[in-house]
Length: 294
Image (cartoon, rainbow, N blue to C red; front, side, top):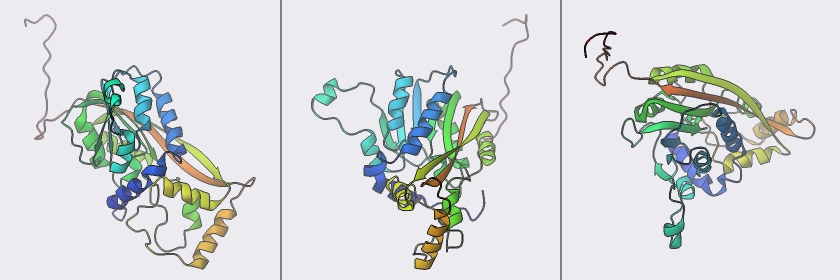
C-alpha cells in the first residue's frame, strides 16, 4: 500500500462507538450489501459449524447468518464496544430461561489481532470492514490463521470510486476529505499472500441519491462512516471553500437528486492447506503407491 496512506484506528473506534445508537437507522448500504453477499452463497454447498462475523457492528448480519446456518455457532467481532452492546444485549430474568439457545457471542477486538486459537472457524463473514484498514494484509493473515483448512471467507469492501462525487467536490480544499479505498486487484494479491486460494471477486456500483447534500453528511456521520485519513484536515476549509465544494456537488443534481456513488467489491476465497510449517520448513505429504503394502 502507499506509504502515505494511513487510517487512524483510534478515530475509527471513537466514531463507531458514538454512532452505535443511530447506526441501524442509516445502514442502508450495509443492508443492501449483506443481501448481495447472502445471495452469493446460493449454490455453495459449504455448511459451516462455526462462523466469525468480522466487523459485525450491531449484529444484524449475525441474525441473517442464523437463518441460513441455524446449527452453526456464531461469534461477532467489532472494534467498537458500543456496537457490540446492541449486537448482544444482556438477558434478564425469564429471557435466560426461555430465550434463544443459540445466541451469538460478541468480542471487542481489532481484526489485525484476533483473540482466537488457530483453526477455530470454518467460515468468516466480513461486510464492509476491510475498507477501514489502510493495509488488508495483516487482517487477512489473522483470518487465515483462525480459519480451518478448506474454510471459506465471504467478504465485501469498498473500492476506489466510492464517494467520488464528494472527493471531486472538495479536491481543492486542504487535507483529504474522503480517505482512500483499496483496489480490487490489491485485495486479491493480499488474499493469495495470506494463504487463501481460488479467490473469486467481482465489482458493482451502487448509487444512493439525496435531496440535500447535508442529508448525505448526516447519514455518513450517524453511521460512523466519516473520513479517517491520517492526512485529514482537522479544521474548517473556510466559508468560500465550502461554498465552492457545494456548488460543484450541486452541479451533479439530476431529477432533483444528488448522487453518491459506492463501488462495492465482493469476494470469496478458501483457506488452502499450508505449504510450510510455522518455522518456514516445507510440508511434504507422502502417499503410498497403488498396490504397495501398508
